[in-house]
Image 1 (cartoon, rainbow, N blue to C red):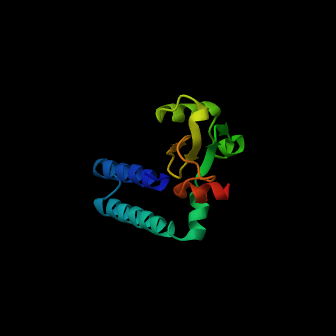
Image 2 (spheres, rainbow, N blue to C red):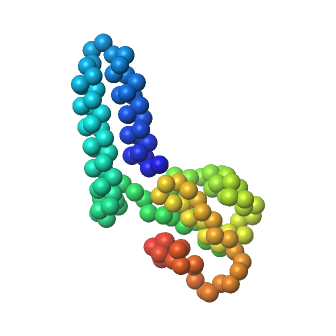
Image 3 (cartoon, rainbow, N blue to C red):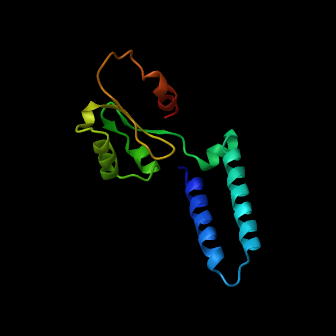
Length: 135
């Protein structure tokens, strides 16, 4: 769920929960507010497909660990501490940083881990190539 989805869901819940119990708000006003909120959410979701707007509201994936080395600058840019990173890595079953080839902080907060080992063609795997190249 993106931050915009979360905010929209909370706002819809507040509107739906408050309108039936409010003495000063009519159902029509509640319906108009709800439709306006959903239309604004739809517009934002549509704008996310426009590259210029997407860069303003979505961060690009960031490589936090490269070949066992933590990239402190990228960690700070994501607003994470080393303890946060270690916790996320443990959730992925990682017990040692040396076993991590790449750890990438995705747009929606996930942390996929590409482990060391296997054939190393000298560069990152194809799905990681573009992210590593931007760093």
